[in-house]
Image (cartoon, rainbow over all chains, first blue to last red):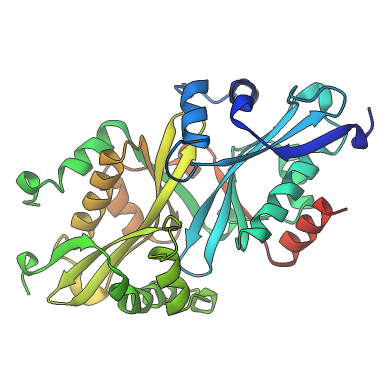
Amino acid sequence: MSESGYRIRVAVRDDCPQILNLVQELLTEIKLATSLVMTAAQLAEDGFPRHGPPAFTCHVAEPRDAPGQLVGICLHYVTYSAHVGRTAYLEDLYVVPAYRGHRLGARLMAALADWARSHRCSRINFTLPDGNAMVRRFYWQLGAVDLTADGWHLHRITGDALSRLGDLYRPEGDEL
Amino acid sequence: MTDSEVIVRKAVKEDCEQILGLVRELAEYEKMPECVEMTLETLQNDGFPSNGRPPAYTCHVLDRAGTLLGFALHFFTYSTWQGLSLYLEDLYVTPGARGTGLGRRLIAQVAGWAVDSGCARLNFSVLNWNASAKEFYKRIGADNLSEKEGWEAYRVSGRALSALADLARK
């Protein structure tokens, strides 16, 4: 099927089970030993809440002759830089391997860039796992620059370390 | 000045002018002062919107009798693997106020906010040449994921972003 045989649109609540399947596929493909504790119900609740703002937006790719059968996802949310203001963060980009080669990845990124522009976001930031030259080339061709080469290193506090640190601020534990 | 004279609290709209001053100081320290395009009005409107929109960020500050000695600017992010997370965009204590544990108090407040909000993770980025910052974060239990797992941070902006957005309109 040619490029025009696919449509890019914003996800709806009912897409969540399939979005989660594709997230699981992405996790397997990048071989990250991280447990996926997310459920389709939680994803739906967080992305399409009854009250309050959604935690993310997701653009999806589907065949025009099979609407609802997702073959790609681009999940993102708004972040903030004290230097430039609102920015977009790309959390997950994935196209099912059998459907690659039709520029769906580039079209999903373009949809995100267009969305970012209309939501006053001046950047798209994202992180890539180490080691995949083909993936890096894909993003370089879209104009991405490598910030880690400029010295920025991603850090994380999680689990017990996060709880312990949080406990430090409670009034009882405020003697440091 | 003793540590007990300083309180850690959530920022209010009136703090934005001082926060912006500290943002500029931090940019200077990070050797990128030309990168700060932020204005007071944007910082105020984005953090304390009046039209019912959700705030784009939350800020905690170190306050000594009305003078802000430091700030932590953060916002919620989302992991499709683990759910709600918190991203710490900026953490800064003005040089004259360092050495008394204020940085640790500030990040502890942020960590408490993360935990109370149901976040599984607190993420942030550190410049690789900033040895004292890396040491500070290591001591409070942070992992350097770029080193440990190979994650690299990328960005699309400026003309590249416009060109990419234009593709969607074709």
